[in-house]
Length: 170
Image (cartoon, rainbow, N blue to C red):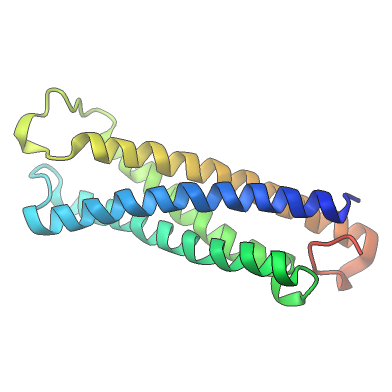
């Protein structure tokens, strides 16, 4: 079983990275939504861009909100059941699914678009492509975080039975 210190450091690094990248995705997606709401969405696939960018906005808000709660809460009250394995798995899984849906769908929509040749018809094309990259990075970090949490859950269950539900190795 990993030591308490190893769990605390791993948790801080993983959730810190998740929080940092999610804040970047939040800023990018919020500015895109604000810009496109004022100026209008790109003329090609207007409704498609609206939905996909907003999914990534929701994913980033979700992940930032729960990332702050879980990071601060775990550092202060790590042995409390409120910050146990299940309370980490559920929001992380939902965030991962939201990012995966948004990243994959926006990638599929923008994969064949060359921003240099799109002209004035697609304003902020480079920013949309940047959002795709950042959202994929956050999806990968969330996947690594999920693997970490599931591994800890199996280790805790094998060692302590079903009653052990905090991330610590008491």
